[in-house]
Each structure stands twice: as C-alpha cells, then as structure tokens.
Image (tube, rainbow, N blue to C red; front, top):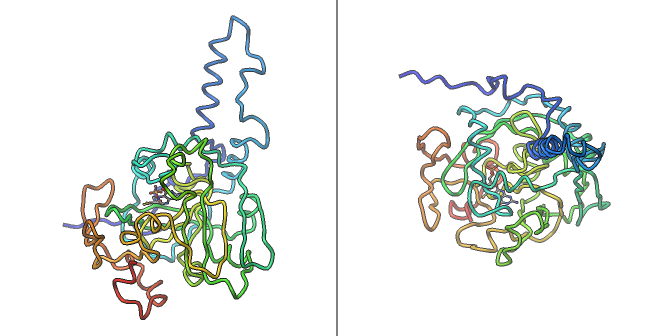
Length: 333
Ligand code: MTE
C-alpha cells in the first residue's frame, strides 16, 4: 500500500498563515469575560472603565504578544529532513508535560495563568558581561526561522511539531561565554502564585536543565518562541523553550528565564528526583530501556500507531560525533 508522506516543506497553509491579529487564548478569554460583564451591566450602570480588560495598554501581555506575532511566519528552514506528518495542533496542544501546572497531561487551561509578556531573560555566569534583556529585544537580534522536529518523550510517545525560533548557538554567540564555560544551565520561572505545581515543595523547583557547550552549539539545538506559525501558547512553554530533538523531551525546558554558563555540570530537575531513571545525557536510545519500561518503540500521538524508536531519535547524522567514546548506557545516563 502506498502511504503518502508529506515532504518537510509541505506544511499545510493553515499552519503557517500569518496571524497579524493573533491574540492568545487567555487574553481573548479575558477580553470576552470583560465583554460579558459589560453586557450584563448594560442598562443598569453602562460600561465604564471598570469593565475594561485588566490587560489593556501598549505594554499589556496581549499587546506585546500581538506585536511579537507580527514577526510570523518565520522563514522556513527545510534543510533538516523530516519523515513524518505533523501532529495536529489540537493533539499536541492538549497533551503536555508542564509540571509547574500539574502532574498530568491536561494542563493547557491551568497554564493560561502564566503571564508570558513582558518577560525578562537573564544571561549569567562565565560570560564577558552578564546581561538582562527583554524577550522581544532578544528575539529582534536573533536569526529567526521555522523548523519541523520530532519530539520523543521518555514516556515512549512522540509527536512532530513545527517550531519557530532561533538556533541556541546564536544565543551562545550573543552571550559571549568565557573559555571556562563548559556547560549551559537553563532555568524556568519560579512563581508558585501562578504555577500551582510549584507549591508542591518536594519537587526541586525551579525546573532546571543543562547541556554541554558542544551540545548548546550543535546545529539542532533550538530556542522556540513559536509553534504552528504563531507565538508559543503557555502550555508549550511560552514565551521561550528549548527544543533538542535528539534527547528525551524532558531536556527541552519550557518558559526559560535564566541561561547560566558554568564550569560545573548542572543537575537537572528530573536527575535530582530520580538519577537512575533520568540522566544528564538523556539521548534517545532504543537499546537502553528505562528502568521501568522499554524504549524500543513509541506511540505516535494522534495516529494510534507504534513505531520503532531510532537512535538519537533519527538525528544521528547531526549529533553522533559529539558522543564518540561514550558507551550506549552512558549515552542515556
Ligand atoms: N519544562 C518545564 N519547565 N516543566 C516541565 O514539566 N516537561 C518536559 C519538557 N519541558 C517540562 C518541561 C517534558 S517531560 C516533556 S516530554 C516536554 O517538555 C513536553 O513538551 P510539550 O508539552 O510541548 O510536548
């Protein structure tokens, strides 16, 4: 039977249409609840300032997100081969891991509490000059593009997603690390008032991840600021998250606020909780089972199919040279 597989550049138009009037769902909901409140009040007291959305104004989250949306679509980079159809947005946006908002997959509506603009980014540690910069000022200085990547979760499911963003290598160049920097440590925001999961104190918040400098400079390491041709929704890790497709999904840290260059190997969130189950390297490897399940196959979300898992999630050509000399077991741990 002939199965038609779309080519990387055959992204359906509805995924890349510029959404110049894009509003994130939360801002929209806020707007509509204000409208409903306003409508309810009509005929009684009229709609004055009290009915205005609390996010109004040029520096409101909605206005800043809309401005960021005007940069979309980013130019497509089709040089990285992809052999699977895109996962439907309705699937990938409703099945997420974001423990800050709950330890289950249906966190999308809880994550709408995250205020993703304005957003400050800190670049610290072994750099010429520590920097604090607004997300949109940073984006303005980066080479923007869209790439389609597969994502393989350590839980043995996978999806295929069109990320928009810039190569992490460009951020590394911008940061000007010293030669003493051997690792890049990244951290997620910390705000238990909006992220109820962070009130669970037995987790080692904030979520932390790390890469070697070679990994951070690898051509595949990507900082996503958008997905499906528009700014990242909160559940995907707005306003900026990592995408390292050759590693298990837990390495792809969401909603990053801090990049620290360091001489010391960082201990990541999951590594601190269960070091035997979630190692620092976490390279996708079908031959090394997780201590509690096999990694030989994966469920492709939205298709009902299981397929064999590939070494480095199929990105061997681009990344294998970084791990020469490491045993299969160590590639994972
Ligand atoms: N980043 C933060 N800050 N918190 C998380 O809980 N989960 C990780 C990763 N990044 C996580 C995170 C895991 S386990 C996976 S599989 C991916 O995000 C899931 O990304 P997705 O929800 O966009 O599919």
